[in-house]
Image (cartoon, rainbow, N blue to C red; front, side, top):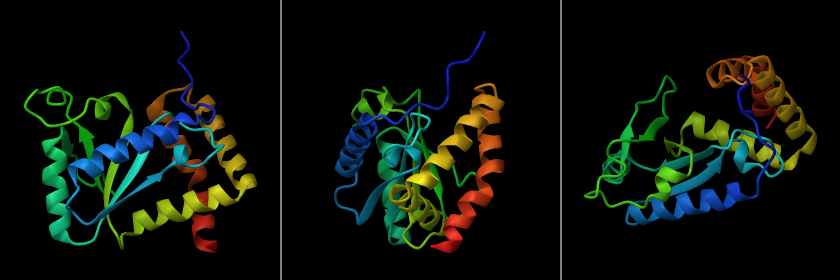
Length: 183
């Protein structure tokens, strides 16, 4: 039995999905100093991607991070640590709590597949995300090379998500670093 494809052609709906998530996060964090960026492949018009919206939520002081963490937990996220990347904190949805009637959240947070990363404004991982995203937005040839790498990794991984992630990381590491180094 074959698996469904991991990589999809670019979809205009990804921008709308990001906008919906950004609105809901902004509502929850309305009185905190922060910024939200759409990053990852779904943020680059024309780039094929896994249909998962990557979001970088940016804070400016440690106090802001603590407030953000508290508020995200209040709308059904849990803090999943840095997952091995210092200065980038991962927040995931809590499946059992996501539908708790006492939580103040919109079910859209559960319906749109997304990754939420919380980064300090001066964090190196945030900088990498933004540099690479902006470069691909401006350079169609680089965007197409990256898409081809992703499609091939998905094929070689037999559409297995975990194996795909490993192959993509290995194969694109130099490509991504070269772009970051030259900008």
